Length: 139
Image 1 (cartoon, rainbow, N blue to C red):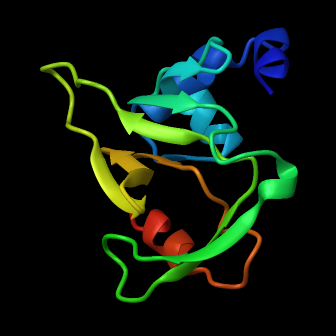
Image 2 (image 1 turned 60 degrees about the horizontal axis):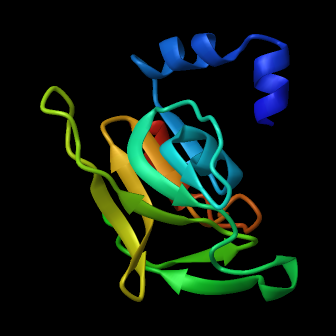
């Protein structure tokens, strides 16, 4: 994905878009949106002040689905973790909004938001529940 974005010179266009419009990075998209990427390190779009640790929850064979409580929703959603990254907050710059933890799996943040930029370790688009999508559309 990153090679494609570089090849077609889309990085600056996405960064400009994200200054005024909502963006939601899901799984690999969260890695792209993160300010810092580890395991291995790579360039990113630097849209949200978080760190992403690739494949933290295991390989494709380690995929799992769990119910998650999400801030702003009145019911849990089914979240699918497929080669999911660990996401964690980074210190935010004084001129930006703080990162909010919107959901956790155990003690680990799995859904973070900073203004209109969202990042989730999990997939919800593979299920039938659209409640989180509807919440995103209200941004």
